[in-house]
Length: 211
Image (tube, rainbow, N blue to C red; front, side):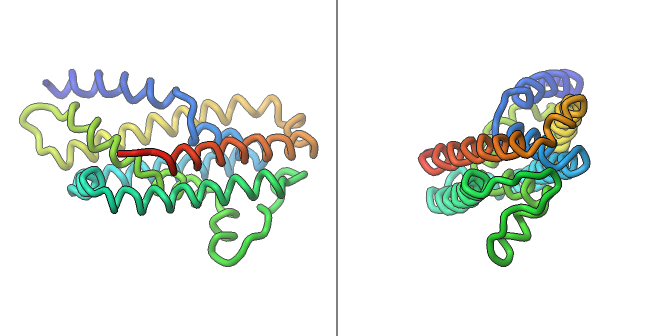
């Protein structure tokens, strides 16, 4: 496979995957609706940073350990499920009624993570072992012939991060015409509860995932 063939085919595949609604989409849209464009962009950058971290780990061979080790996969899986469940319960039972309002109070480090759009995006991505396993099984298929595997895989992960960020910017821009309506207390509360329900569903799905 030549570099041109590799990049074109990968861009198409990564684009389709990015457009498929999932946890990242829900997180970016919820942040854009309840906290505004700047914090939503910070969330998107956090998600993309998570992609880069996974890309680096896979390029260094650590992702293969995750794919091969039942214990490593399960530990990260349960941590990720607990984190998503915590976020979901906070949104579901303590929804905000005002945009840019601080996130519901938890304790210590978890509260600081909950208040940071960047960290929410980053941890939501990094604590999902399915991303690492996906990268291990997916990215090597697009490595061009004659190029070092590690750096090329990291480059593909970076490309995925760029595509994801561009799509997030598009979604964030789409919420701007609705910004006044989205600031209504009832709408903010409803969005928090809906997103919380989605997060809990993803937590359950992640907790029951097998390698």
